[in-house]
Length: 229
Image (cartoon, rainbow, N blue to C red; front, side, top):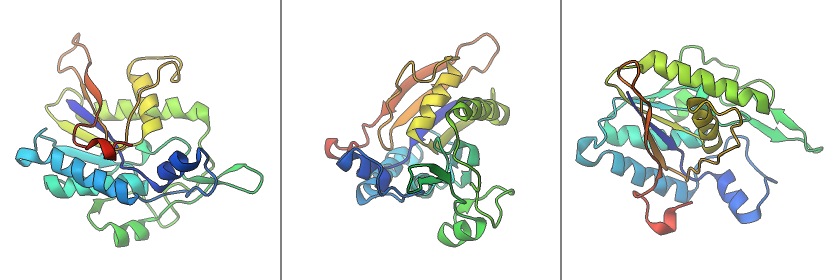
């Protein structure tokens, strides 16, 4: 199996942080900015060069809007269905701050919203009418547990197959995923940079005893310098 881990395009929260260095006024589930939409279209065109330059066979997205919008652009260009995967969401989940600065979990969008707004998205069966998050803020100690779970599920789904899998996910979750892959006890010991719509490729062994190969990470050659964020 080859895995392409792709970060979403620039979101409104990304732009807010870049402009102010703070999260005051953040959205609990931001959309792509105009720059993020350009990045997503350039990513989609890059992936689809030659029909499907990387031979991607499976395409997954988190249920966060910025990821969905990025993945659907790629799916349309590749002619592939985009499947939701709840567990590859950004760290923290769907949340915002109250007036006292406490981080409060929020419901997130529900099945009806996704079906109306993104009819091309293939939703998993457990998604219901109550919002896909609908739980407290995800605490730090839960991040590596979820990353290990995602890694195990990728291997269970695709394992030693010839599948070429792309997941559209999030920058901070990538850090925890790589820590799980590399058996790092401290996910903050190394910072794995992921720009918006950057691509990282990881090849998993086809046979016991072979090594995982990190072919590259944070590839952004599909973006002109002015659109690298």
